[in-house]
Length: 356
Image (cartoon, rainbow, N blue to C red):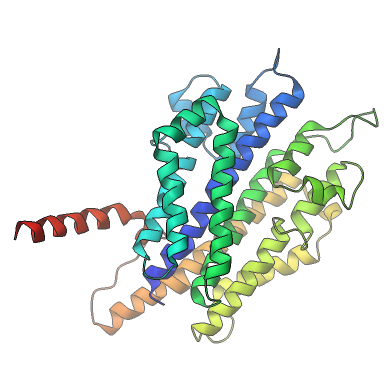
């Protein structure tokens, strides 16, 4: 597979998962506000952790002096000048799909194109203003549709493995950020046995783990919630499960590429999976949840960089060297970042042909 194709498929999957995670976060925060009671509640204490999770606190503060729910939801969902917004994630996913149009099924393309048309349409904008929950659920269904179609129409070859790799790494990264937002909360349950620790419940709901967790545990014990979302390999959105799937995908990709020995991305992901498999939640809490998550996110970034160096940069530089062309350093994500420029070039070529 061409390195450019691999890069676009990998990032297409990551951007779809990123948009889905934003939808989950916004929905769960709205539910948390309803549970806490809307009257007399300081909105900032609910929306500030959301901005911290996405890493957009600084960008938001440049546009707004105060943290208000309406401003935060607009900024994270539909602002075109926020590169991390749900709107721009869906646009980026669709643009990456366009560049590999001949490598993916028609159904995958149609699902992403339809989702992009919806979020940019007057209907979508009006729905976000008046029925924001319905808007987020529509985006969630679009992501589910993309993943279901990809699962049922993609051959289990390199394209499939890059799709799974992008999805799993993005999901693990976002789960780690979610857990980090709860790192400052008390692990002690309220004195009343019937009381519900709202933020821990919202954490479970934000990753669709509410019913799955309750099937194993009767009480919302924070330490057990952390263990379930971090270390349980049976739950598909847990960090341990995502890392295990990423390792499986990398093993297949390395074998298909004929890479001998232990390539760098496989070494990184194998170490992380082993650490997660033999770590206990008591050890995590003794280290400090925030400190543990910080190290985990650094390791996930290492895996992402190693994937780019191995499957994109190394392949591209090798081809350039074979052609005796000058070799330049390529930045991660360079191919999918210039998709708009490629589109402009194509449009100019089409105009020239029409004039001729």
